[in-house]
Image (cartoon, rainbow, N blue to C red; front, side, top):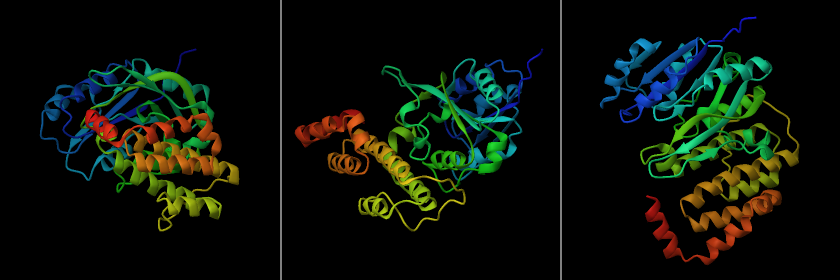
Length: 331
């Protein structure tokens, strides 16, 4: 019996990524997948990006270069054009691993009830050792509401899941994928796999490296929408609000899912742990210590499992001047 390969739409949003986009294009068009729709939405690049896109235009189903309001709008333009049964977006500095499209098609074929599949990625940067990242099975499925527990370039979703969820929010520039997958988690079943499906590039110009405080702020905005959409206990809202991690003025989601108080407490702890990773990486001792204490109060199991007591004493005992020195080294 011949295997039917569902159409897969891959969208690449791009803006002035002439140093990287050729690798991205080749990683996608070189998949050898027989039913690929490849869409590139460029935001009006002024470097050599357009020359590179034109060079491979015969392998691109559709591309356009025009000004937009940012990455979210560019991805949405691609989503509106996408006609595939399976969809993903790959930013113009990331890569798909060989065989990823075949693996995605196989996973959806074997799990027709699933709306989203996700695998692992390789974090890579010049001069640094590669690191494999994927979802922690111990935290699933609660972590789908606390953060994006999986690398976005290694995720695929169905057309029907997109229709249930809607497009990205154009006004979000850092947490648009977190918001998007929260809405999907309200509506769809997710499935994790152990396969490495992508490579995620870290460089000084990437938002995930240079804009961590902005990420933290938008994540809090999105998480507040989630909390307003569920029956969150008042004591948790009070604790989070007093520490700047809940905004009562945001509107709730229209989607709904039942959670018990213990589950909501676990989700809050996981959200705060992800915030802690941000501020610890930024070497903000004060905020990191505040978050460690808050996690201990809200979900002691996360405090114990991740050995946050060790992080706490490291923050207390290492002099601030040394932390500032480390911050300078990280820049």
